[in-house]
Image (cartoon, rainbow, N blue to C red; front, top):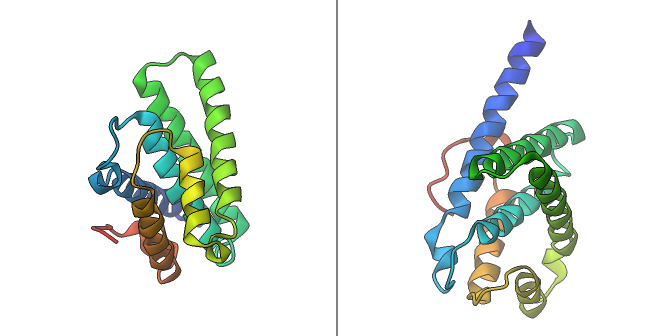
Length: 163
């Protein structure tokens, strides 16, 4: 009985953290200079949020806990794609592309702290096709990274108003 309650408790935490990542991803300031705010652009920004979160908390949280959170996020993304109306074959293909893209982003931000601002900017240039204010992304995600280092994983389940 205690295990079931704990799993439900963690699912609620995962849901709240995921919803906060979505809220951060919907920040209109991230899309000001973008000519077209697309689903793909939002997925990329979500992946950066998720990538930084996983990077920061991999040392503090158990592997099992972070893996469960990662799995939860992937399921939520799959549900979002289904809601758009894609069929099963397309969903499987898209999810494979998105997971590979997420791992690529995690790899690129792995040594974020050691990179200068131009190398950080180049990361965003590689992933965002449209015209963006890449300096804005560098500054935003550096503030986000610092925010994560000052908070615990479970603390992220509380409502995030802004960074």
